[in-house]
Amino acid sequence: MTPPPAVPAALHPLVAAFLDDRAAVRAALHRFGSPVHLVFPQVFTANLAALRGVLEGAATRYRICYAHKVNRSAAFAGTAAAAGIAVDVASARELLSAQTAGFPADRIEVTGPKGAAMLRTALAAGVTINVDNLWELETLAALSDPKTTVPVLLRISGFPGSSPSRFGIDLGDAGAAFDLLTRHRDRLRLLGFAFHLDTAATVERVQAVAECLDLVERAYGHDLMPTVLDIGGGLRQVFTADAAGYDAYDHALRAGLLGHGRAVHWGSNTFGYHVADGAVHGGPVFHKYANTESAADILADLLGAPLPGHGGRALSRVLADNLLELWLEPGKALVDQAGITLAQVEFVKRAGNGATLVHLDLSRDTVTAADQEVLIDPIVLAEPVVPDAVGVYFAGHLCLERDLITQRQVRLAGVPAPGDPVVFANTAGYHMDLSAARASMHPVPAKVAVLHRDGEFDLCPDADYRPEVR
Image (tube, rainbow, N blue to C red; front, side, top):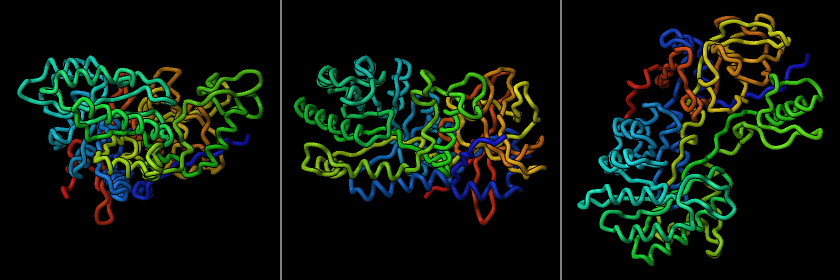
């Protein structure tokens, strides 16, 4: 039968060169075992340089805060610290990791919902606190040392035209926040306003910026002097080398769900789609795999977008004219294509429904976040014994029906053999860590930094990696 369309992965040239060096791949598996997560700090550095280039060109003051939660890698954190940027942490352990990496207190920002224990930890560390709600603000004032002024940002939500969010202080409650800041001005110092939208749409971000600029004006009326506008993260990644291939696969998947042609889905999984009245409705639980626009291009579009009510001036120009420093919190954008996961084939079997199952020595939770489907095709680093395009499902090593690594059929050049290496591309952005589990007492895969020097690849345990200080 005809296999499904291919959805090839986009690979950074450095990562592609590593995979072409089969001796380096074998060395990684031999030394650190399978499965193993590989991170590439040099790709992180290149991604950072691209964002910095856009910001420098916009001629506005800025601060980049690496969103640590995207990956637990000490190598990434150390690379960010050595590069002189800031870091966004969302737990006590992340804060400790940032401090260990070398970030000073004035380059650490604590974000996310925080209980009293986390607030005490942040206060003791002397870092900037991005306040999620009015309770946090009032509690900070109560817990803080009267002799020390705490720098805070107010995270705002409830913007017109944006989806509701459980995070942040609603626009309608800004007045109450100003009252608290005014009442406790001896303990709390307002640096500015922050937001994080679950979208990369420029129009929504522009609207949020406009609302925050209004808040800046209102703050001045309370004798508060904000100087920062933090636009959060959410910049996209480039996953696929063939956006048309992604679209073709999505079309085949939906046709299969309707019973039109060959099904490429396992069991009753609909991937978030809703099938009714002879049609497929809604959206899938996939990342935006078809995106071809880089994070740098998305950021450039945002900074160049005209702000309503400001005479057509670009967002970056308005911020500069108002002496506001732009902060952003990229995570996925900095680790885009900077990490892969290596595993090995354990065996191949045919299921009762006729499907070919390729069993690997890792679980679904190792390479995908929460309920997301892996829509980029895994790469088998071996020539098939009998080259013949075939559709397979990759299965995990847990004794659970749900542990299908790909719950949709994947096109391969042939059936792999036991021991063949398999690569999951671009897993550094949340995929490695967000859902990682120790079910059945399986260990969490090792994490290893890969560095390209003098034409060769060096491997180093992630925790031992030390970046070059520039």
